[in-house]
Image (cartoon, rainbow, N blue to C red; front, side, top):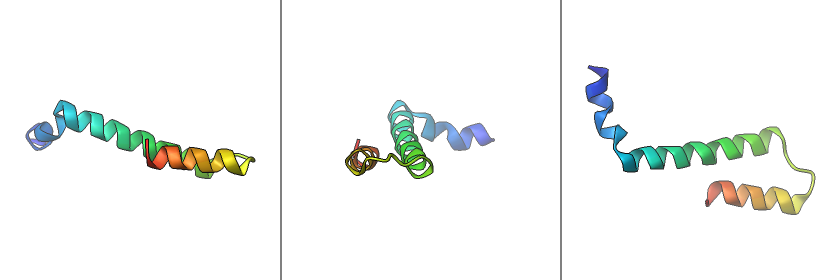
Length: 52
């Protein structure tokens, strides 16, 4: 039953989108957990995580 609910989500386009969102979310979490000491690097990493 669960596989029938998840079948539309497992399309190739959806998998790529979910991977990109998970990577961006992971980047933000790492940025918050271990912030860089250089403000320019911190800003660049945050922008890259939000707009890949």
